[in-house]
Image (cartoon, rainbow, N blue to C red):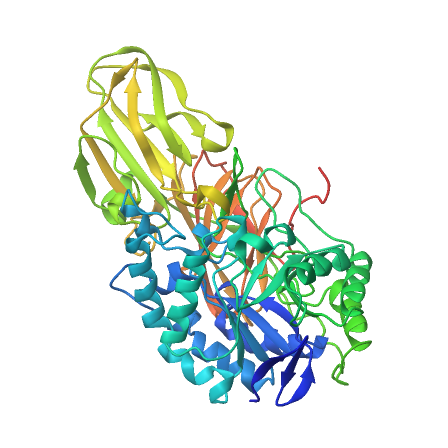
Length: 583
């Protein structure tokens, strides 16, 4: 493929003027069997480029493990983009934000209590160099300079919103160059952060979702020459638990896009297709109050969570056609969906009865953090023996993020970081009572100063003012549920339990799990972890990619963290419920 050049105030490609009209889609939020479909729909909307982040924490889940397989086969994704005739903007981080767990930074970094992320801390820089040394060599042949689709590579991500250490950005840029990246580099920042986040000699771009001319004027004031580009045109937004489903009017968004393109600037739509933060991979924000993000990353994007065109797809296609060629092929339609109402979950495996199959207890005097246990996602179960009977007040110095409290494995309450809760009162029935704290990592903070977000119990635990010691810490990553001991459903469980059922299909297709009457937990279909549900909303369904399903029998497993109702049923429906759009 031709090589992107910066000539004066313009991009050129193969010596000809070129405008980047790109859209974001994250391969790690899309089932790999759907990559080709989403890329084709990007081309049909009129995009000539796609953009993707790269999640360090999935590619290198442990310091000695690096993955480029299955849903993380980035070279295969890039090859599919090239086959579709699309260029690629690659944003490898190391920090990516993306409403993704920890902003993509692996949790094992936080096992070092002194590490300073996104800085010149040698411990951090050594880890980053190890990551790039694994990631980049398989991608070099996909650079445009070698005939591949990668036009340009981003240095860090919105660094000006976090720091102003130009030496750190220069170090990362030098590392990319040293490891063979010879296409243009660029940075991106919100207009107010350009001075802090830019790197002299590297193209600066701006992120915004409205007032395009104002944003581009700020970019031009900062960077007197060079192409103008909005690297994140926010055409939608993400949702958090306990709020409403955020949408943006398609007509209004199209007007803003038209205004932006009328200036001659290049653009990357954020997002073209949001997809899903499957499993435990959603992030969170903490601007004095912790706010975890939902599993759906629908983002009210031109392609919805299931990859179907929305009204925004069609309005954007019409706008793009005013400024660039749009394929003459018809716009894509909706894909097939399936429904299976009333699936009964006939088997139950109480969590406390299955602890030996889920994790190994580690003794300690004080509670250990999740990172101290070498764990990235999921839950930690902390247990200790209480010395005396009587009224008690339990105080937790730091809950990260949601602690269910059990006395002799009977539930007595919940403490939530989001609500700034630290204490709970109950009665200890006898000396020797077992106190259990099941702590959920609801997503590490992905933006701002709070990214040093260690999970589990932080600091001391006190009962009636006295420090509790002598703990067992059991990591529960829930990566393998195959050894759970199920029994018949029986009466409703009082505590956390896994519930399993089966359903038969003739022809698999996309669908959505709805869980009316359930409270909070997680869902797996055929072992594939869909994500979290919570009656708090707004999200009330979970997307099931069709390739996860198979003809014949399929199984569904629900971890319900609270009491279950007698009728343990779930529905597969043809559409989602992402919640009300106004508070």
